[in-house]
Amino acid sequence: MKDTPFQSKISHHIWDTKYRYHHKGEIIDESIEDTWQRVAQAVASVEEDSNMWEQEFYKVLEGFTFIPAGRILAGAGTEHKVILFNCFVMGIIEDSIPSLFENLKQGALTMQQGGSIGYDFSTIRPQGSLARSSNISSGPVSFMNIWDTMCGTMLSTGARRSAMMATLRCDHPDIMTFINAKQQPGTLTNFNLSVLVSDAFMEAVHENDEWPLVFPDKTLKNNNKADQPIFKRWNGTDVKVPCRVFKTVRAQKLWNTIMQAAYDTAEPGVLFIDRINSLNNLNYCEYITATNPCGEVPLPPYGTCNLGSINLTHFVKQPFSADSNIDLKDNRKSKQTAVRMLDNVFSLSRIPLKQQKEQALQSRRIGLGITGLADALIMLGHHYGSKEARSVAEEIINEICQTAYVTSTQLAKQKETWPLYVKDRYLKSPFIQKLPKEIQNEIFKNGI
Image (cartoon, rainbow, N blue to C red):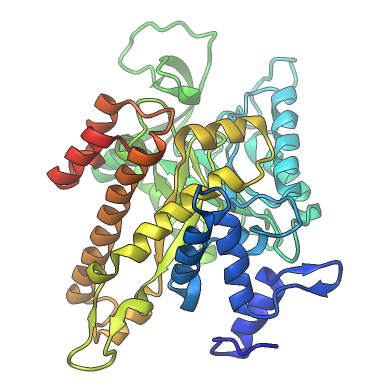
């Protein structure tokens, strides 16, 4: 075996069991350098000048400067026809048995090929309410148990198991059952849980107001009474739907219950869903109600995670000294190469469902993140929780973000814009409006 740059036995073990390419019992990747070469060659294969880009992609992978998500490392350039995207948010679950089990099937097919999944279960009527067939509904959490069992039986490619995210609106009548669902050991072990928290709820918490738990009821007529709750954008549409009030609770009590459960079991998390949608650059054409299982990427129905991380420790010069510094601006090329590399994954990956493929290719959404922040701050002499550390972290993120957007405008000049791009509406999104004017001008001229 060739010498490898691993610093510990455990890091070598992780590579060997999760990312190293084995085929029919034979070791293909003799070293981590072979893994980098395999991935670089595969992702460069969609370029016109594939040889040149293979070298550039290898440079950014070498030494762990840029670390693509696990599915890319494990699957790119192998004989296996696998997904190179880690996770998906699945379709909208309609409140019916056929839709429930169609979504269960789609989830199983996605997991079969190595993808993890996220679902919003807010569309399922609450426990004890009358269903269309005159049966009594068992509620969203009971159906989540079916997904949990399915996930437990599905092994994905190699040693990598799939995972799931479940979300529920903070005004759903079964929200308390959802919050406490994992208090019992062994319950919903394949799920992460997050409550969809609205701006209205946080205002009610602040004011200690009563909070209605409601569910849409089309049999009610919209009589425009002030005390009749109205759902807006239910199921991602702009249609206002009258709702039936099942119960009223104190907003602060509900919030405290969420916080206590998170303290006791680390779940549920919270997603500030109104803020997510208002800051989404594509809020003119999609509505988000869920994330991937790890929670870092809010996605629309059938959206996918195409992720990679910049290793910040690689950019620290003269660590642990008075002259330590991080030179992200001097190493923009690595970030630019990372953006192009992730964009190429769309042209390379297998995608299980037609709906997922359409969503992926229409939006070409990538997530360029970071790893090694805590280590980098220590190497720079900053305490993780200090004001100085926060300032450095903000500077780092701004530099990566702005470089990624500029790189994307350059890609648009070469490869055109993505199909869902509408220039005027995109440029008006709140996040884009906060970018430097020169970047906004580049988007205006070239697209993104």
